[in-house]
Length: 80
Image (cartoon, rainbow, N blue to C red; front, side, top):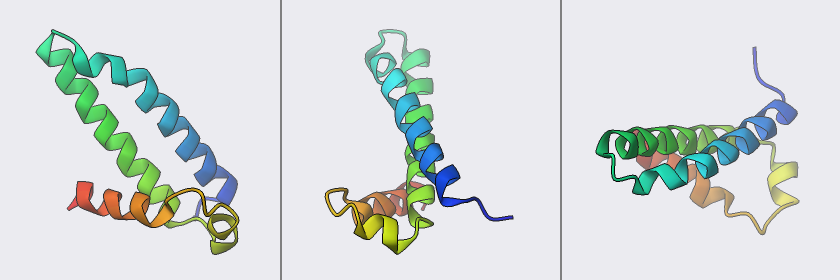
């Protein structure tokens, strides 16, 4: 079953929130903590890109201030 546009937007917003929470840990002196935070941020960036890839053109066209092609492209770089 396909996720709705509202669910995909919620996925993006949740992933952004999680990335923001983990950013401070990236500079942790505890290397294990920093590595885990880096892995988590990378995963949530993938989620953002995947959700953005499936948003309808009506939504993305209505928000040209957001770099949709770059978000989708970055997801592809991370995954491959």
